[in-house]
Amino acid sequence: MRVISAPVVPRLAAAILVLVGIQLGVLGARPAQAADPEQLDPDRVVRSVVGISAVVPPDSQSARTLGTDREGSGVVIDGSGLILTIGYTVMEASQIEVTAADGRSYPASMVAYDPVSGFGLLRAEMGFTAPWLRLATADAVKEGDTLLALSGGDNRSATAVKLVSKREFAGYWEYLLDEALFTFPPIRAFNGAALVNREGRLVGIGSLLVMEAVEGRGLPGNMFVPVSALEPILADLLAYGRRQEPARPWLGVTLREELGRLMVEKVSPRSPAESAGLRPGDWIVGVGGQRFSGLADFYRKLWGLGPAGVVVPLEVMRGATLTPVPVTSADRVRFLRLNPTL
Image (cartoon, rainbow, N blue to C red):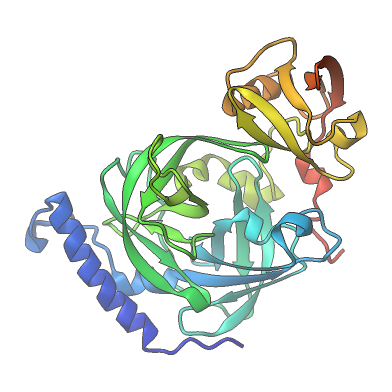
């Protein structure tokens, strides 16, 4: 069992009080006696953030890129031990353990994984208890707000960060958020970290370290997935382990955007793209008879062709030759071992 020294919690809570003082000063809040009735409770916030350790079988699809031993954070979001994290930390895990703020470790089971938002849900077991945080609404924060970023486990910390951008994010792994949250300065233990507002509500879950927190400027920071994306799908995730709507068509490619064109950098083994003959170095220049303006536009045109299983007509440049490559798409989740112990 990993043990975190007990004084860490009160030290972090005290640090949060200092950070909140800075935050309220930055935001020009009213004095405490006239403040909003819902106030940040530093001790509760610290204890709601847990560390996560996951072991993934080496023959799993994600082990090739994410490794077999993963560490991250998560946030307790209800009184039954339900924990929200970023999905790639626990995806395909055969063993998951959460570490509470007092250093005690508990086994946890996977509840759901949502490839659209990127969220993962766990439930801690064997007597786990911890305070939980309420979720913030989509309009709870604005650019310029000072927030708290908290990590759990061996990297337990609390850092004041500024929300420097709210904008679209397109990932090279067939992933798109209509609106993501970008913060500065960067924190190192970002995956699954909690982004908390001045009322102590959870605003976002840490996903990435980025080199441009502000578009067009070389300002490093972190990308957080807003928790407002969870509310519409939470009931489905708890009941079925996934959202109950037609799955998006998945190709199985890693893409790099250059001047509006997309180069295939990697092709996932046994994926639809591999079956169709796509290979690294191919340039995708059209989809469904349409041109596109970049990665996000490509995804929207791809997903607009129909649900998973639809044949995706790609136009591919190989050298100087334009080649049609039809790809029979698939449901990404069916290629993952989300119950690897079975």
